[in-house]
Length: 419
Image (cartoon, rainbow, N blue to C red; front, side, top):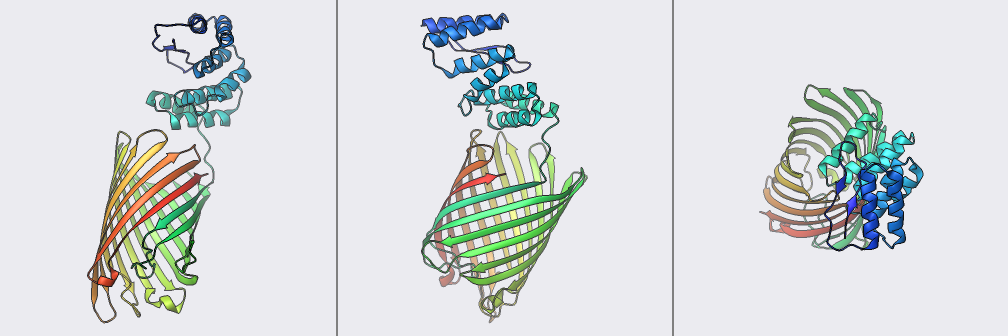
């Protein structure tokens, strides 16, 4: 069977795939249509493609070629109808999106054209096609940025050994839970070198067995962002309040500075410093009163759709410690992360983390924990807005205090949307 595929792409020649030995009358008409197209006799090409369809050909490549010929004949509405049939097609979908962008541009729909070209660039496995789509977006002036964005996530999970928030110890209880996350950002003012933003985050976790481990977190913040040479700086202040087990947990006020720079096309360095003041929400959690300082550094390398991150975190605490040894004055955390973009829709990742923590007790006793954590995850992009994610995490906490050592695994399934 012959497979001739016509292309509208600018600066690309006509593409013809290899021909098979056997041919049916429909194949012969299809080939005749391709020859007529190469000779720029588009009406004759349409005639032969129509005869191929009447002879029984039902194929995506025929729909695609109908769309191309009708575009050349400036019958844009009919051409659009054929390309729209190919949305989601595993091999022709990206090409169809590109051509839908051309049709929208011809029709005077600039925003629609940019949207189609963006879809093409996003899903195309062909770097040349993606680059052509990005060039078209640039010619059209690009999409005007929205002053806001939002992200929502719905999670179902299982925890084999629920970790208690105040003590970082485990409850020796398992449970299913649901989790909802919503965050948003609004730009008050944006300029080329600086901008001002308002942010909000809401996280709620509910264990389905009715246990007392439910927790909620609300954080409101403001950020000032600017460029300083090769660095992008972000100054922020955040106000947070949380509950645990139905009780007021802690209230926080945090200030921070983040900085990132691209060392070259494939390497990036990020730094973050956070200072946080913590006050208990109820007398039950008075031992958490105090302050916390965190320094975080991340070095990222991109190689052929693979991403490697090397991260280090240092946290120092100054807590009242009037009740238990459930806080860590100092911990060091090392993390290695790997992501593989195996297709335009599928990303796989893995991370390994080691945390060393020294806990200080009421009477001067100390407790040392060495926690290792392995995480595997997979992400599937449904479209430009929606993704699904599966995650499996194993944690082993080795402690000098036998009551504080534990191991567990946690499995999560989520659906997420970025607006």
